[in-house]
Length: 222
Image (cartoon, rainbow, N blue to C red; front, side, top):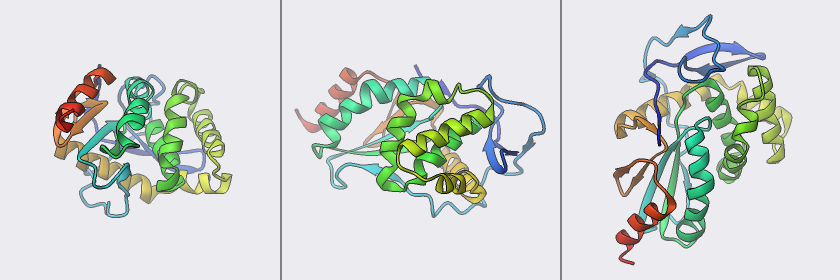
């Protein structure tokens, strides 16, 4: 099952001393007051500094893209039940180049993305593993301040310093660029829910590891 994308613009509010972005859809934790909608969809925001998060051999015979949200329960399940086996059997063996692209349903998912990216490309996937495996804990920690604290705790477990985490979480330009890149990607690829995967450009919904393996092996001729 896929989590559908919200059909609202993202908005900017101030929380815990920093500027953060979120939308008004889906999460029961959303506070729907004092929200100012964006005047555009981010087309005027420079996204050139947003790194594509890639794992595996650059020249792998198959390229797979996953669109996922850090606050999507189906994405956490996919990460635990499918991605880990995929990494062992196909990514680490040079058969699949894997690209992870974030989708933002709410401010908490954006904050999680900013924490994951805070350690750079080298730590991104390790921090993502932590965020997905503990999603049910940090995403339900309480009010927005408690959730921000829980995310910082996850960052510290990954070896990030408090000052580094605070700087990342208060980087408004980064937040705007991440949202703009997300909007560009989902519009280009017509992504309407998460997790959504693309295998050599072919779009697939959420699937089991058995089904994914069948698709990959067919492409590999195995």
